[in-house]
Image (tube, rainbow, N blue to C red):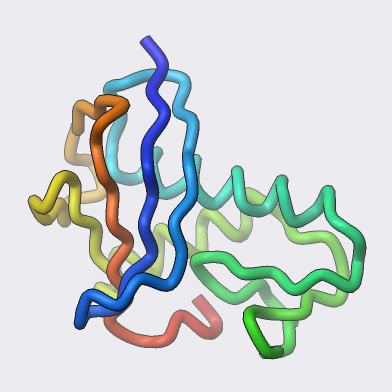
Length: 130
């Protein structure tokens, strides 16, 4: 069964940066696959926009310059590379995930998500350079 989740990007102090919906093909996934799905969705949406739009994603794309409200990549972003960088950032504890206010910290942890589930990506350090 598929699931549509509310994703929240927050600071460690609880400041909300943005909120959006993420569609998953299944309601049972791993933390790793959840991160990858989130990044793949945001990269796909960015690559479909006009070139002058800033990228506002989980980690800074390779070679992108920091601009107001995001990053300015010089070319289309590679979704696989960006997802790999996000998974590495999670493994290095640059951000953590809260699933319905419960911290999940193992990339291979199996999680069951429901349409009412809330996923918070909480940044601990700026994710410049992934």
